[in-house]
Amino acid sequence: MHCVQKISESIYWVGGNDRRLERFENMFPIPKGVSYNSYLILDEKTVLMDTVDVAISRLFIENITHVLDGRDLDYLVINHMEPDHCASIEELVRIYPNLKIVGNKKTFQFLGQFYNFDYSNNTYEVKDCDTLSVGSHKLKFFTAPMVHWPEVMFTYEETEGILFSADAFGTFGALAGNIFSDETDFDHYYLEEARRYYANIVGKYGAQVQSILKKVSSNPINMICSLHGPVWRKNIEYILDKYNKWSKYEPEKKGVVIVYASMYGNMENTANVIANKLAQKGVQDIRVYDVSKTHPSYIVSDIWKYSHVIFASVTYNMGLYYGMESLLHELKALNMQNRTVSLAGNGTWSPAAVKVMREILGCMKNVEIVGTPFEITSTMKKNQEPTLDKFVEDIYETLI
Ligand code: FEO
Image (cartoon, rainbow, N blue to C red):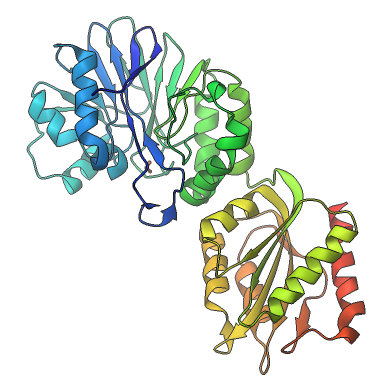
């Protein structure tokens, strides 16, 4: 049975949800599922904006067939060629052989890489700022390279002021009937997942996000239609402001994320004592994570949110504990910057954790290490408390 919704008088959401997939990109846990959004414009010409993941392609075709109600499909705009959005292209061309696939040079390069069918009679290549009139609707294409792949485009529909924004402004979390963000308790249900999606999927490309935000900002935007999650039609400034902050690597809040790597609980004890002492000073936003327990995407997301991070790790193989090293390299790969950091380490012999953490963090922009790293050998002793108090005080001074 088809499952569609009108988002305006002549535009339909024809996407779908996937709550079976365990990990997005086979990497990120998605306990709330994910939606793959696609939109169909009915005008003198019919235009489909992107397709969906193979997992829901059967329903997707049913949705399109229902909305078209016997009409031909004239255009398929490909804003993004990642397989979670491009899996149904071959089938659409088979069903609608006159279909023109709208994309840029890079889109068609990737189409050839992912597919083996002959689409040579179906291409409609566009360049940055080209337009396409399809009746009362007029589409303008903005290339948005690396948000989050090189072929990505935003398509702006000028008559209704709708921005089809590819992955940008998307979120993990399936849609639960309510398709507009203002129909949901967005802050409570989606915001954490939107941030986790942004930080881990798009986070590396802050400069490119800033560039496309500037590029489209001169156009009135009445609606944002992303490829994942709810559609924005109200309070659009809210999500634009979040994207502006996230892409500038600006923390949203003062607060401390404590991430620890502990084998037998001694570094964990240190992390808990630090959190306790910060709390007793009145610090309210403290998050504590065991790097071996929590999927790194959640830790990365909270580091994106908060101003301060304490990395506390044991030494392993004369270097850094694997999970901590992996997290730090991921943060470096994501271009994390503008954070205040403190370090704690443990080593029963030849302690090396602090040294390695310092080296990795030294490659990140505007990451300031405050205070003297707090080091223990095996366990924290009572006589180290004054040193720890100074460590906590140094962090606190930069928080207030
Ligand atoms: Fe939702 Fe970059 O794919």
